[in-house]
Length: 99
Image (cartoon, rainbow, N blue to C red; front, top):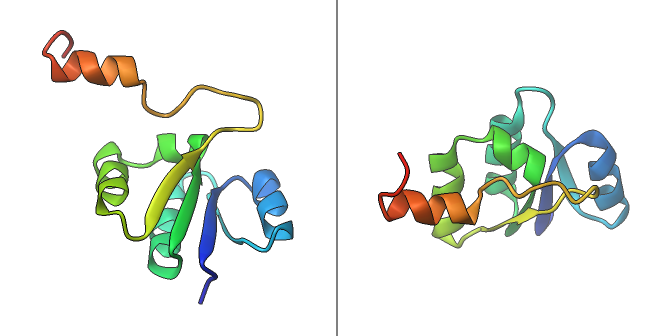
């Protein structure tokens, strides 16, 4: 059983979260969805790295965020990389300006 907070992401970033007492689920290459599902089953708060979030099916990630329990948050990469979902592109799609 995990703790109240879980992190899903790469091994290097996960080591820092582990030092802070967070349960970590390393998203090995191609294993982000399995790690994410384990974290959802075991924690009250799930922190997902932006890189791991990009590997998840968008519909699954959106459903988990909308569910509110457990609370799912995407955390930025240490290098300040772009977010997994571009809010401008999302609004344009919703308005029918892009396919």
